[in-house]
Image (cartoon, helix red, strand yellow):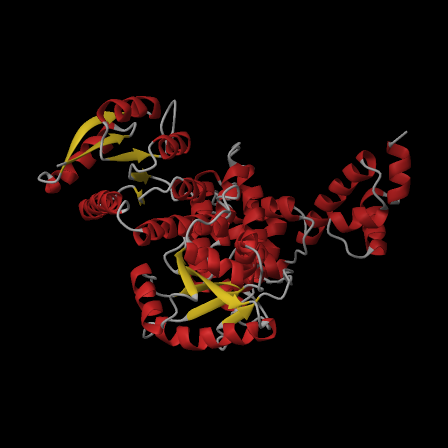
Length: 521
């Protein structure tokens, strides 16, 4: 019988987890519960469980502090991490602590059962290894090999930099006598580590390639390829030949694969840089229908500016809380990307980031939160590890719809009067190119009817109202800043400075310079 303790500040989660594990009552039993990290440490010290189930977010001492403590003081204790957040920092902490699994709440009975059985298997395996390690050097080498694999994975992902000494003879020899190259590949189907290892064994690549699962996505995998040092001119040929043999074997029917390939490096200390290069290469994949499969890192990381003529429409629909229209526009946007010549995934990510940043500025006018920068960084972590246009569209579709629904109850456009809505839009967007045609399409109203109704309701023509708003803003800039005339004209919506002067004098009876002198004595 194996024992465990559960550390979670939510009593219902603790009780629910124990209840779900009753299906394994002949194999495991809960011997203690704790509501925070400090109490959890005391339980572990007193009861010596065979494994621990713990939450990441808890009072007093959360998982971010508890995991390193347990990993240091109980390195052989299997840790099962549960969390309600798919936060990359949490995942990274769990991996660096060599946690057995990271489960997202709510999890099913089958999910927790599978992980606990995995913990039992590890305990039994470790027990067996500990008994056998004294017998032969071969078994000792295997243990060192497994340890080295974890060191290498940590180095690749940037989780560990202090420990770079390899203990196994096999891996030490490979790194001493080979250069290295990292291949990251994104697949439309879930990648299985077991199937990858079987494929490498069948192809005879087990001494040439190492496979590592990515913590960021089930659809992302990492290969470490060893390239012979003695023939550097043929390093590229080795990479090409390896891919030609490997890709047909790992591509499932109906699935597609895209590969990012780093430059060749000579030191184990370059693993993190190689991973960054391979991921950058993946990001620079073309998104056109006939795009290549493999992308080599070329040192270029620049993105190209994408201009979409419906950006302002999307921003308005989001602020107006029009979720159906937002959904349609996001689909149009991602279709548009595929029509842009030479457009890469990196270009799409950058454009979406610019749009999301404008949305956050709108959101800040409604909801003031100190978490905005943290949320932005968290979102960027997620986006950095998406390498599929479809997955990126799903992510941003949800992101923009969430923003729309957050703003909707308090939107300044949540009124029935269409002319009042148009006036609000003009006051908030006077610096943009505005026309009756554009606003009539934006507010679903006939252009001629808009012109007539606007004059009836406001007593002004549309163009006069717009110019009044712009001139009022230009007066503020003239008296409160030292901006030049062309800068002021541009910032209030006039591209032509001479036209700005003419309109300003028409509405004020003086030139902008005369107004500045008169009102800044």
